[in-house]
Length: 297
Image 1 (cartoon, rainbow, N blue to C red):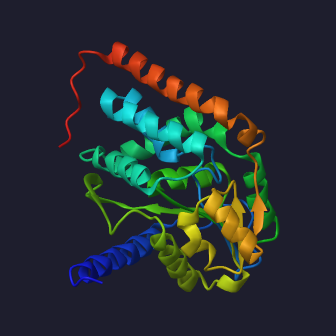
Image 2 (image 1 turned 180 degrees about the vertical axis):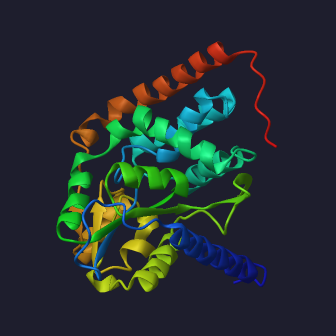
């Protein structure tokens, strides 16, 4: 390893730990209607393509675009990334990081109350009908067994909390955006809650809540979440990408796939989805032509 690589990796690890601790500290507890009886076991669910079809941050970004938070060029780029994500079914870390970082940076200057209010409306119009019923049923099984259920996602904590609350789950851990006196600065606390940071968040929450991770379950679609899945005694791959599916089979993990007919239709959908994304971007451009981009301040 080159000497310059070591500080960079250390910095990334430190930011992941900070992101995880911030997410755990911000996690709301006891949203569920029934008081848990099994306090040492819990379940942790990724959101994008695990609980919800597609990327939650894209649905949020599209809703914010309609409310003039984003320019047409920015939403067109997000549309392409979403088409890729839904058709290919593999989470591209660079695409995801760029989309989420952009969404967080463009809320700079807005208030936390404003984002939460808009998030409630955007959930109703763009997210509620995209919840995978099979995954929702799995979460309910844990609740019925007296366990607590948290979402663990790179989406902003405010949106993650709304999704958890609407689904009747215990709470959520998500990316924490820095804010001062209730106004977003456009920076993150630590880093995105992604990969190693998710595992750090779960470890911090487990220490706080007295959880036995060997009795806990975790669910995700992406190989990027191996740190989280490997942390618990009962990992499960939901709608997995090819690498996670192979890893799950090799280690005897449970696999659940709710994408009925997806593989058979993939070849035909590639062209249709890309064309649809492009058409949507052109239509948006026509309707918004001449609009001045919002301030990034």
